[in-house]
Length: 166
Image 1 (tube, rainbow, N blue to C red):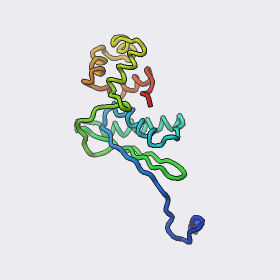
Image 2: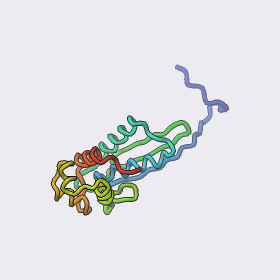
Image 3: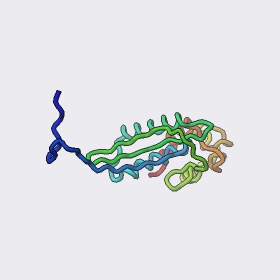
Image 4: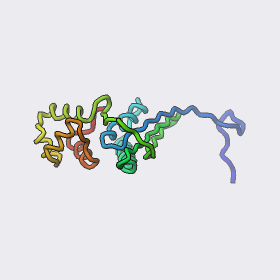
């Protein structure tokens, strides 16, 4: 068994590669899904994710969020490592708690984002509720910021109205 030769210019010494690491902790709530995706996009800018990579990121964030969700205000962590020759994104559910954070879409609260989408499309709360498959009262609560959509409802919102702005 032989070891790989050291990189050019090194005689078996330590190879040091610059790495940029950015990390953020998000509350395990459906409103955090677009925030986490935006965090990754901004961290890797100007690079763009391929559609398969976008879906893998969405799935990883969703899984970590579900694992961390519960009555204890769980959190999940997103870490982006930028190497000279690539990018690595790690999404893990955290054991800590985070209180008082409201869901955001970029700089916008989820409620504000959804309100703007409905206004742009000229939809009433009743029409939106019908499209999403929830009650008008539920949409009203989302728009007022009283509650947030459950994950399956959030997926339908995104499927119907598109992902939040980057």
